[in-house]
Amino acid sequence: MNKKRLPSFMRRSFLQPWLMFALLVSCGLSGCLGDGGDSEKTNPITMDVYYDATSGTIEEIIQNGAVLSQSGVELSFDFARVTSKAGKMKSFSYDPGDDDDGSNTVTVNANDQAEISYTYQTHGLFTAILTAVDESDNTANITLEIRIDKQIQWTQTNTNNPNPLPIATTPDCECPLPEKIDIDSTITNRNSFPTGTTITVTWHLNSPDGDEEAFHTEQIGDGQDASWTHAQYNIEGGDWALEVTIDTGDENIDIAHTVKILYEALESDPRPFTSEATDA
Image (cartoon, rainbow, N blue to C red; front, side):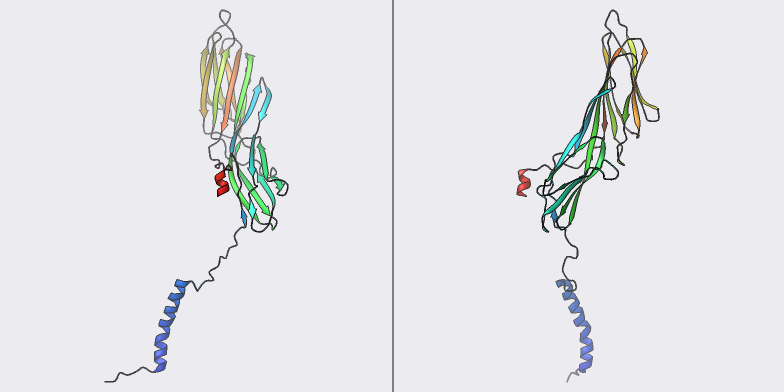
């Protein structure tokens, strides 16, 4: 029995959908429907910047109301190994983040130097930006978190009318407030037996609104001393005050406060230059 063959036009219409399906599958596997290229331009600059530290502590020494010294925190950033596939480097810059308008940014000519140092004079948790620009005006950035704490060593000697110690907790930028204030204080009764008497003293830590947030009272005998340590959390912005009152007795005292304004440890990890970095 002879099989009937379909007319040629019917065979063509029957085969065309299957051919299209096979073509689509094969193209999907081979990627022929796309151009296979990267549509986004990659940055030619390699930001190999090295820095030994991203945190530090400002130290201020105050004696009998006079500021004897204040040491800032100097941080350095080495751009020497920053390169670009588009040509030579043109400039490097460091925005320390300790102001609101970027006016403290330091920019150097890459032909003149490759290291930038900056000294922080105020405490805070700052967002800093490292920037490199090549001769084709390509730009690359690195963002770092910088933590700068502050320690105040405050003394007042031979007094029966102690001055308060102001503690400024507001950074010089729109930055997070400190995590805490640490207090380590010692009061000495200067007078010795048999001429001296026992005194009663109280430490008071007051918020910027004038509310007493913490206190501690001690009796101090002739020629003796007493100490108070305290960690104050939930810090408000403004001027706190650490005060000492002599509640009983009329003896002169020496006061030695060590106060630390501390931020949460959220700074970026350091990236020191090592031999491994050269190998990489």
